[in-house]
Image 1: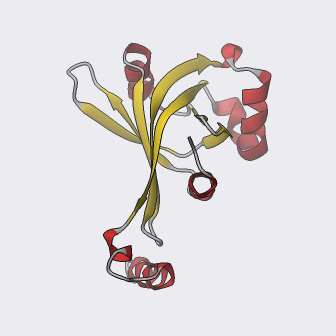
Image 2: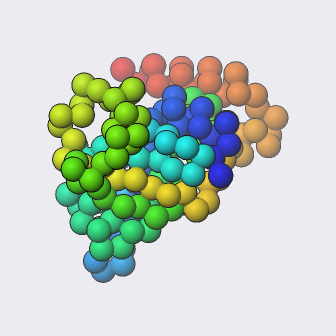
Length: 149
């Protein structure tokens, strides 16, 4: 499900906006910045401070995550089923995946959310349809970001 291009974007831009469903059916979106890719069909993030997201996932496991490269205006949208695992439920393989990237944060995790991917979409800005190149987009967007400081 996750292509090499998708995995590259996710690996380079690990902060994903996680959408879950509130009790009243409304969406709840929250940034999570501790993602790892386990395989072509599984992502996970560490629970550092996510009480609302965890509550929603425990009651309604549908989730969607969007990762974006703001300079290139490319994104990956992942839809799937999320499951919250307390620390004592995390497999050795899952723990090892986090140790590779997030070893300094492991002792702060209250648990891990594993997302089984049911759909994934690579999204490009309409600017590409207009003939604007990735280099041009990166240059323009970087200049914009630098002008903000």
